[in-house]
Amino acid sequence: MFDTMIIGQVCRDTNTDYDGRVERRPGGAVLYSGHAAAAIGGNVAVVPKGNPADLDFEACFADVSGVTVFPRVSARSTEMENTYFTADRERRRSICAASIDPYTAADLPDEKARIYHIAGLVTGDIPGDLIRECAKRGDVAVDVQCMMRRVEPDRTLKLHDWDEKYELLPLIRYLKTDAAEAEMLTGTDDRERAARLLSLWGAKEVVITHNTEVIAFDGTDLYREPLRPRNLSGRTGRGDTTFAGYLIERLSKPIPEALAFAAALVSLKMETPGPFLGTRDDVLAFRKAFW
Image (cartoon, rainbow, N blue to C red):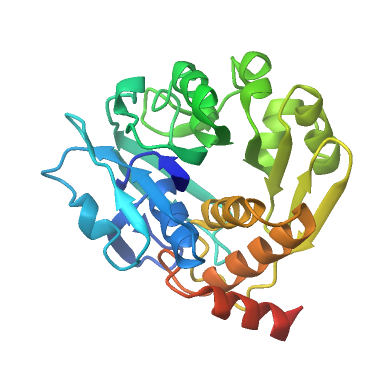
């Protein structure tokens, strides 16, 4: 049995930094989450979808051990164009130039996992029926961005409320949002209140990321940890790395310990572009030095 099965596409990213530098590389939540989960010791399955003529999915995960790849074929691959306007990479414009065919229940491998981690990129990638199917098999973790980031007619991305939130939140063991998504879902910019509302509506454990901290709420107690990167050159993939690390740790640790580890993991990852390629010992040493 896998610790986690991460379902979402590897995409073709074109990133234009605030200083005009352009970089083309594979991206997507599954890439950052898969690397982070495996690097800290998880037994990880990933289910990327796209056109194999565009991407070599095995090669995308070849630099980390502990990842088993179950590629799925789509007529088109997802293509993202990200432009960052500030050095902290908090302000950006994203354009989705192309999208995959939606996932279906038939895309799920027969193998079992303790956590089914939904990690799509835009609305339509992963339908509600796939969440329902995963909930029959094990604990479900959802990064809510793929339920809320809609591709507009001009191909830009805009957050919209999640139409099925009241129906599907009760099926979710672990829910991850960022601060903007939490505000759109709940109508409040108070992250603690947003976490409590999402829990009230059914999510068993809510994780909300912000550029200064990450919080977790289990329906009773709220926990928080600061983020302490020394630079932000690897800002892309912050939420994906946080959530993946948190999920792996929650398989054996209580919330405070899992949250503390995840905060150190993502703080270290943000110092280097690309997915996390360090080790568990690196994370522990970083936390010891800077917390």
